[in-house]
Amino acid sequence: MAGQRTEFDLDLIRKYDTSGPRYTSYPTAPQFHEGFGPAEYRAAAAASNAADPARGLSLYFHIPFCDTLCFYCACNKIATKNREWAVTYLDYLFREIELQGALFDGDRTVDQLHLGGGTPTFLDPEQMRALMAKTGEHFRLREDDTGDYGIEVDPRAAGAETIAALREIGFNRLSVGVQDFDPKVQEAVNRIQPAEMTFQVLEAARAQGFHSLSLDLMYGLPHQTEASFLATLDAVIEARPDRLAVFNYAHLPDMFPAQRRIDEADLPDPADKLAILRRSIEHLTEAGYVYIGMDHFALPDDELAVAQREGKLHRNFQGYSTHPNCDLVAMGVTGIGSVDGTYSQNVRGLEAYYAALDAGGLPVFRGYELTGEDHLRRAVITRIMCDFALHFGWVESRYDIDFREHFADELADLAEMVDDGQLEFTREGLSVTPRGRLLIRNIAMVFDAYLRAREGAQRYSKVI
Image 1 (cartoon, rainbow, N blue to C red):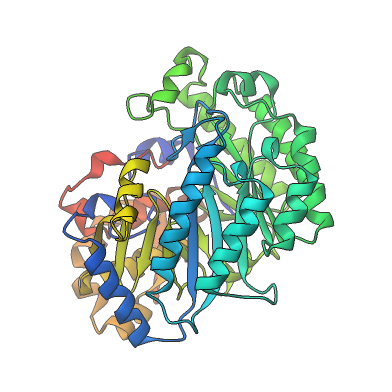
Image 2: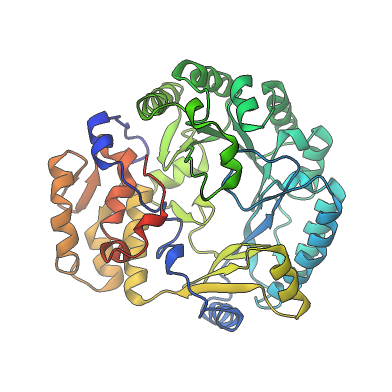
């Protein structure tokens, strides 16, 4: 699985380059509804405690603030240089921590924790200390450095002292935003970040003993060429991070106003963009990185690569994960969580977030409770996305179905992909071929009952 090579088939990519979900959840967010609110969330937490009091927890905190607006960004963020905003936000976030902590049994250990944004390092080290201390008062944090405690870091807002403080308070994984080292590209997207600044953060993190370092890159940005992006990759490869994400830039200025600041004439055309992707995959593979799937690469001994080889990889709202059995408790504005067969999302705006907490309630405004069929299809899609294969017998024994009968229509729809060499049927089930790996979303989409009913397909980005 993880050792399998990935082939770039341009004709196949052009044929199947449609829009589709990334499947960080199934069902996906368009199925969430406002009939699911705080009461339903509390019931899910109680059911989770009753079902498995020892089940681990994964905590996510959303810090929405950014000092500078990056024009490409599609995240939920608030650009401001006023640090007082963070003071008020933390006061309310602490209230939510108290409310959430009271819902889960105190013996449940936090196996995974992540701070995302926005820019989490918008908070200063003392605010970070206060956040982790507050979290430790209401959740059982691991004190032996065995949990996966990560944070997204902007090198422009995190020097060596900040990195040392993060390690001291319990973080052991770092995700660093880069996008591109080319000065012309950086200027066009309003993110001036010299390579030396990024590498200083990596050096500081290694000196402090962080367990894992990850860099985020992005292709399809203005002024990028195949040669210029390979120069960035060469510099990154020399730094040897444990993981890499190479994201596709989706230019959607009607949805994300900041992208209107990007001149479309400066964007690489589709052919050039595919050329950049192709060379990036080849370059990283030659350098020893394993293609995990969905834009992600890892060194062979990284936990993601190991988990994939062992069939233990998982996907959640944070992407690929090695913690399949944890309830995901999301806190902060727009946070999305997953507790005991439900999904939930917090309100999107600060005013609504503050108002909900002022009223003494959870800021959950919508969600979804999975049906039995949803659980079945989620398992199928997850294994396809994570393993590049599916064992029909595993599904049958777990869900008491005849796979070929239950999914007769889906298997018929896969016939064209088989003919195109994208996947093959085996005695045990199906296996994605090297040329099909980049199009894994297309295969998973066949098993999506909501897409088959044409509910919300237009909301998704291109698969490549």
